[in-house]
Amino acid sequence: MQKTNNIVLFLVIAVLVVTSFIFLRKDQTPQIIEMPEQEIVQEIPPMIDENTAVETVTLFVQKFVESAQLEGSQEAMEDAISYLSEEALASLTKTEDLYTTEDLIQFMGVQEIPTMGYSTSLVSSTEDIAEIKVTFEHLEGPVERLFKLSNVDGVWKIDSVEDFVAIEIIEPEAVEEIEE
Image 1 (spheres, rainbow, N blue to C red):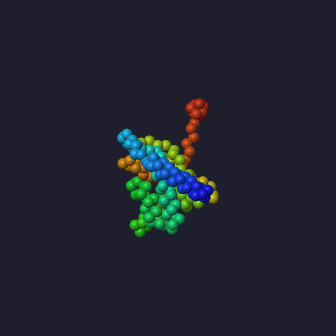
Image 2: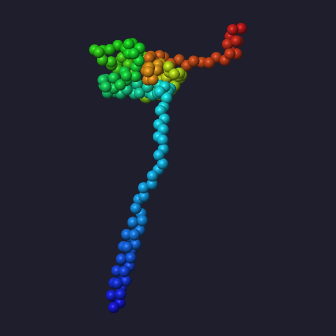
């Protein structure tokens, strides 16, 4: 008798647990809540930005280095060339109708690809022109170049590369002393 009561009690508890579980699960059904419509505003960055001028030079140098490391990869070379203006392209020499790593080395006025990396920094920028300093790191020491860019229809293009010469600002008092 004791055994029968225990079995009945166990079955009643099991039925209650299963029933409770089923009812609790029904209450947890997901509810759909409608959110009020909001106007989606997409910010469009300005077309002319000095950061894009720096990015243009950085991407140009990356593609130049990539083309040199991949033994003249024409695809990487074409990518690098795409950052140059018509003026810059006119100054390059082509070898058998193709641009080479040597053409870009001459254009940039360096003797070789940077062996230890490079860095870029903005020197000056207006809506139409920008100047970016690039420091190529070599075992022999850094080589600094000044990339001059122009904005062509909202796209920064590299026009030329020159030696970077830091301009020293002379105080007006010092100028007067020199003149005396």
